[in-house]
Length: 91
Image 1 (cartoon, helix red, strand yellow):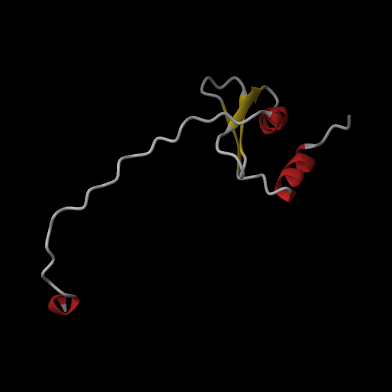
Image 2: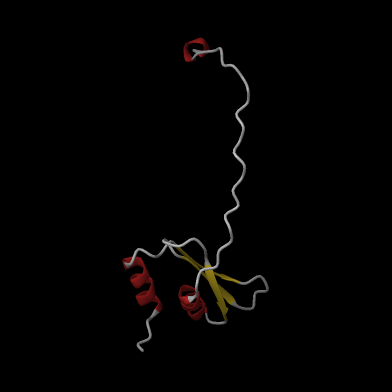
């Protein structure tokens, strides 16, 4: 099995149209890097933590995305108001 570099992995994902977002930041305790990957064709995000930032990104891109049900807000109700002005009235 041939190991891909981070650049090769990113290029391969982009070529397949499967790259929406990647990010890299320290975890909340400041002890490890957190790599995050969101695919373009699947809802969800995957992440991984490692002391090495490159390894964290590679691990995140190889993990299965985790998703939660989308929280849909209730539709906004339109106020029951009658509009009597026109654009000409405002000019």
